[in-house]
Length: 297
Ligand SMILES: Cc1cc2nc3c(=O)[nH]c(=O)nc-3n(C[C@H](O)[C@H](O)[C@H](O)COP(=O)(O)O)c2cc1C
Image (cartoon, rainbow, N blue to C red; front, side, top):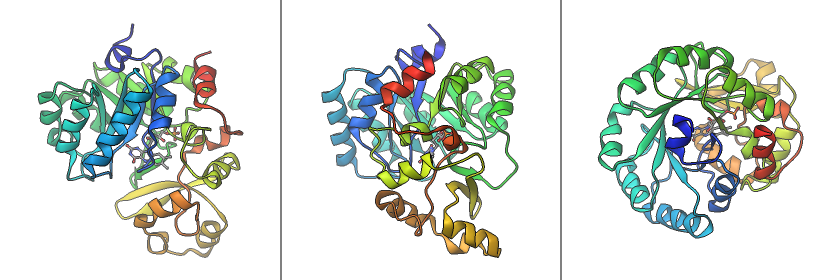
C-alpha cells in the first residue's frame, strides 16, 4: 500500500477536488463508494450546523472514508470546523489558499492528517517543512483559483515537487481519464485530485448548464479571469469572448462575489462557468463510478 493510500484509507488514490461551495453529501458518497476520497468543499462554508448535518448524512450513506477541504485565508471558522469534522470521524483534510502554519497546529492537536494544496513548488516545499503529511500540487491547467504570476503546468510541477519533498505528492490539473491518471503516476505522484471531471459527473449537484458548458469545450476554451491578485480559470462564453475582444478590464466587468450565484443558477453572464483546461477531454456526463473505474482500468 502506498503512503498516500494509507493517509486516505481508500482503495484508489483519487481525491475529489473541492469546488467553491458546491456540496452534496450524495456526491461525496458516490466518490467514496467508488473507491476514491470524497470531499466536502468547506472553503467558504461558515455554518457549523450545516456542516454537522452534511457529515451525518454522508456517514449514514457510506462507511467509507471521506474528508473536507478548508481554505485557510477565506474562512474565519476553520478551527471550529475542524472540531466538527474530527468529532464526525473525518481522519484526513486538505488545506489550500493560505499559510499552513496558521492552521496546522489545530489539525495536529486533533490528530488529523493533512494534505496541503500548493500551486507552486516553493509553497509545496514550505508545506512539507511545516508538517504536511502530503502535498497536492496543482498545475496551471487546473480549474479554480490561480495566481496572476507565471505558473507551471502539471507536467512540469509534479516531478519538480517530487524531487523536492519526502512526503507523498498528489497531482491536480488536467486529469480526467486513464491517460492523465497514468501520466500523473509516471511523473512520480502517488495519486490525483480531480476537479472538473467530477464537476461534470452525473451525481454532481452542478446545474445542467454548467455540465453542458464543460462538455462543449475544446482545447482553447478556458482563460484565466483576473480577480485582483488572483485569477479564476473560466470557460470563455459569448459575453466573455466579446469583452476579451474589446480589451475591456475583465476584473472590473466581473465580481467573484457573483460566482456562487452564477454557478448555482447557470447564469454565466453574471460570472462565467469555472472549469479546467481538461474540459476538452470531457465529452459526456458519466456516473462517478465510471469515471473512477475508467481511470484505474
Ligand atoms: C469551478 C472550480 C472551483 C474550484 N474551487 C476550489 C475551492 O473552492 N477550493 C480549492 O481548494 N480548490 C478548488 N478548485 C480546484 C479543484 O479542487 C481541483 O484541484 C482542480 O479542479 C483540479 O484540476 P482539474 O479541474 O483539471 O481536475 C476548484 C476547481 C474548479 C473547476
